[in-house]
Length: 187
Image (cartoon, rainbow, N blue to C red; front, side, top):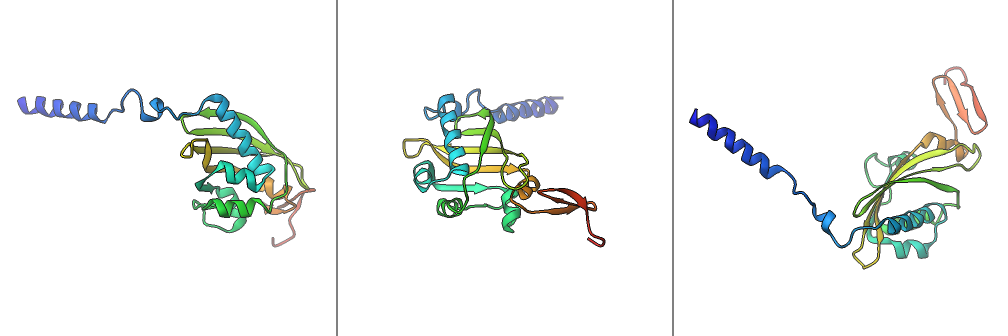
C-alpha cells in the first residue's frame, strides 16, 4: 500500500513538472506584435508576393529568411517538405522574375507574439479562377524593426496552374483555362 502511494505521488509530481507555466516567454516578451503592426506586416507580405521590389525585400526580409511551400515546390520539381527559397537571395532572385498580380488578403486569422496566419486569394491570368491560400508568417525584431523570417504558404496549385495557362488531366477530363473537355483516348 505504501509503495502504491509513493508511486502515485511520484507520478503526480512528475505530471506537475510537465505542465507549462501559466505565462509563456512569448506572452511576456516586450517584442510581441501589436495588431496594427501585424496588419502592416501583412500588407508588406502582400507587396512582397504580388508587387515585388528588391528594396522592399531588402528592408523587410530578415537575413536568415526562408520560404516554404509544397504548392510551389510541385511547380519547381523540388522535394516536398523542403525549402522553396532557402535564403533571402534565392527568394529575391525568384520574386524579381514574377509579374505583378492581384493578391487579395481575405482575413488575418491569428496574431501571436511573432506569428501571423492569414487567408488570401488571387484571380489572374488565362483562367481567371480564384486560387485560395493560407500563409503563416514568422517575424523577428532582431534588427529593431519587424522583419519576415519565414513564409510558409499553401494554396490551390491546380487552379494556379490553370491561371498560368497550364492544363491537367483528371479522371478522364482535361482541365484547361478555357474549360473542361474529355481526355483523348489512352490519356
